[in-house]
Image (cartoon, rainbow, N blue to C red):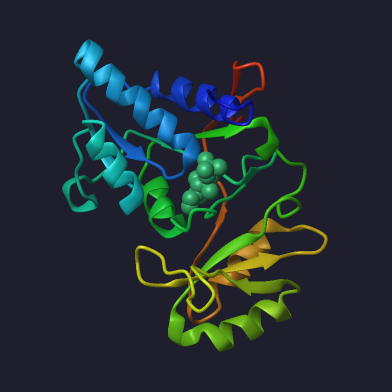
Length: 233
Ligand code: 5RP
């Protein structure tokens, strides 16, 4: 039996799957909410013969999508993506996001940037007034550069914590890099400026700040329903 915590994710994830049209190239995000999107897409393929080409944003999603019968292609096989459906760890009123809780932020951002439309699926608990208040900001870092990057991150006013895969081992992304989770005591006051500052640090591969990439958000609610919000511009 599903818990109430899973219900908002399920309704949001499945609702977004209904936005996929026949013949589309679809970016497939990563995470537990997107899993429900994949599940519904698998059902639509079986029930109505829906045809799509999926571009996975992680090895995890690739494996799950294959199990569910989705056709997959690599980035080299597409020049543009019609629609990407992805999750988020936080999203604010300007559709700015923190992503990377699952460590897939680099591939997610590459796929988002190639997408004509990016739809975000979240539970209502992910909608925040200010980014960084409920979730740490993940930053993907080249392992060799970690000590220098950590010093630079402290200079930016955060407490950086190297994500661990176990007691002795740092977490590694699909790209072989590490993730540093950054805690900002007061949240992130200026996301655009912070994104630029992070991009300027040698050894930082990408940050989990996603700005100007989401076009719509599907917000699941505790009663199993959902609300679709479109970005103004
Ligand atoms: C992975 C992500 C996910 O989209 C984000 O962590 C949300 O995951 P979930 O749907 O499991 O809450 O950015 O890198």
